[in-house]
Structure formats: C-alpha cells, structure tokens
Length: 172
Image (cartoon, rainbow, N blue to C red):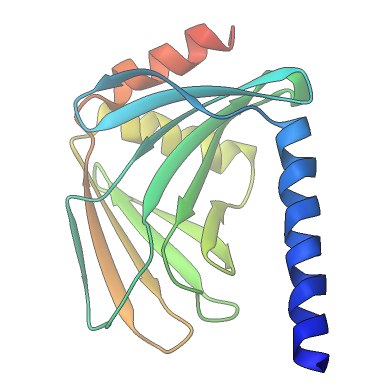
C-alpha cells in the first residue's frame, strides 16, 4: 500500500513537471543540418533559444551501457549569452572531475556536474566555440563516477555553417 501511494505521488510529480515544462518551452525545431552538425531553435518563456549539436563519430571506453552523447553550442539572446558550450556525456561524471577537450592543437578544460560539462567562463566558451568552427576534429575525454575513462571523437565538418544558422535565427 505504501509503495502504491509512493508511486502515485511520483507519477503526479512527473506529470506536473512535464506540464509545467511544456507551458514554458516549445519543442526544438530543426533549422538545418550541415555535415555532422545540426542547428535547432525553440522558444522558452517567449524568447528564442538556438543551439547546434552533434554526436561523436566514435565513443570509446570500458563501459557496459551509456546514454546519449552530445556536444552543444547555445545562444540565448534574451539572457545576453552566446557561444555557451556544454557536453552531455551519457553517464554521471566522477565528482570534482574535469573533462579535457582537444581541438586544433589546443586543450580546453571543462568542469562537470552530473552528466554535463561546461567551460569555466565566457572567454573559455568563446575560445572553444571558435576552435570548433575552425577545426576538423574534436576529442573529448572524461571519467565516469565508476572511474571509467571515455574518449569521444567528433567530426567538426559543418560546424561553421551550423553556427551561422543559429546565429542568424537568433539574431546574434
């Protein structure tokens, strides 16, 4: 009986969260795809949010299962933020760990929380975004909560045009 009550409460909370989210943000719409990167736009609280995303060409690590993996660059003009880089890794990161990204001979460090990694500040976001648009390959290394090292390799083909698409759509 207690378990049934708990499941009913959990179901109610999830339903309310989904309804609340739906009222605040529209579903992402594909703007266009260029090479290995796709550009998207959605509205959140009446303001445009534009982002570009890609999945790795290879994902290597000694793991049994892993969720979706994405690299993203996001513009939120209403919040006056552009070029925000985020990385969704498909597993919880090791606490207080860093992610290492190599692009065009440069190395970038990201901080982690749960399944996502971010650049430390605006300057780092802009530098990484610029390197992605100018590069041909990106290698991302991280460590899972269980201590598994992963190495994800991305093609950057089309990243420059996808960036132009999100910038144009969001008026950046």
